Length: 318
Image (cartoon, one colour):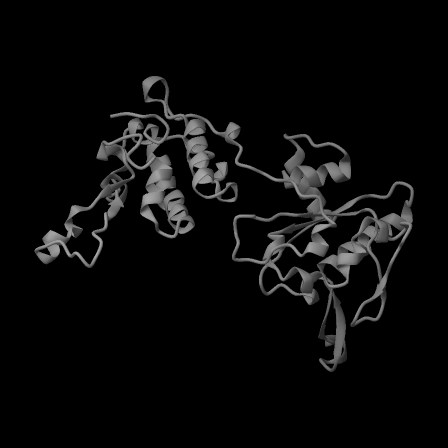
């Protein structure tokens, strides 16, 4: 969708068939630039830094333009060439909230406002720290940022910067998924993911729902089993801090949808019972129910998994 929006900003339309190639061409031309923020990403990378002056034999330093300064320069040249109908440029910032946003943007949080752009009513420029040149943001530069709102371990969007963006919420799109099998053997991936996400929302919130891309391209039961074992289950364990009761609630409604161990992702492990370990029930310690991954998954017996195993996520059975 980011690619589609970027191409539409430049061309006004997007053809799903040719769009990816058009996007790549604009990348090659520099009309679209993609950058990924991370914890170490700095103003010097984004706007302007300094580098050793190799032309002078490595003595002294010279300004080094960052990604944002470069695309602004190109966009401004296009704006000056055709001020009434300039070519548009797009900067895509992936994982925008992974950087220290206020430090990366600094004075740019003001310059990117529509009313402060070059040619706007309240046009504003600043003097860059190293080159001491005047710098402004042209009106034909568009910024698209992407972020995962579920990741609370990283910085939130600065409130001053938040006012300068429109926010579009993307929820999992189950319509992009296809069922596996037919007839009574059919596993309805749409119903399955919808039920999982409704349970996550009920137990936690919508921010932690599971995206549909995990299941795109999955066409067999063993492939689906691998996705659950290697991706979905570890994600749920992390989301619910290894609270296996809640993980089981998400996957099988606890025991509510099936009591058949063969159709449950996690089965109870009786060997951790107090009486077996200590010869008696320890009154001072609560006896815990310990659950382990179904052997069909843990022992890699994926070819023995039946459709009922996954259907038990969204259909009640014995």
